[in-house]
Length: 315
Image (cartoon, rainbow, N blue to C red; front, side, top):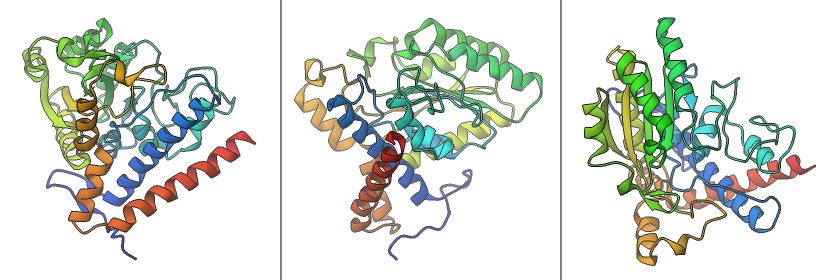
């Protein structure tokens, strides 16, 4: 057996983390993403929007308690898998099955929600769920709960009215909310550099919310940072904002031509340096948790498990 599956301490302030389990979740998210891209191209369903480059969100959820609430972004497939372990749900929704756990096949794919797992319903409108996350924050505060809610959106979402409603709710009332801006550099086809003026972390701090910029291409850095934010919020120090720097490895969606707005050089550089799964795999090998052969074996195992699940969904 070449895999070391012991739980380890990522840092003195982090909860014990099984790195291998986290890596498997991220690999499964990418396998799901790649399979659904192929099925859309084959005409099995009309639309897909993916998660490639955002798999470190699994590390965010790994740092939370199971009773904490989530309000997820459409690229948060890895977060869904980390919280629920349900590989069937995204497939059922993509194929518009009535057994889909999010919208019973009546909504677009990637609308992650679950009453059972405390994941708020979401909307196709970017960041429209932000004020509702603030409402959960109000409820948690009123009931003096130790729980918190994580709200995530993209860099484009940070430029919306709804995002600013949540920001002011959280700042003025010191709500137990962790706001995550998953900045992959692109708001559809618009660079993130024009979504806000200046530095997002400085902007957040100026508005009364503690903030940090975090390397979202590193699952370990994302996990450790989230643990710091969670500790900050649970200790009563107010809300926090994570500016999570990532890379978008696919087009915005299946309806977007990636080469129409991104240069070949930028795409190649992003693919080479900002893939959180490749980065995490290299780290696991360097730390002695895995061997090189395990990386490919785990990828093949995930794809095989996913194809078995797809066959069951389509029966």
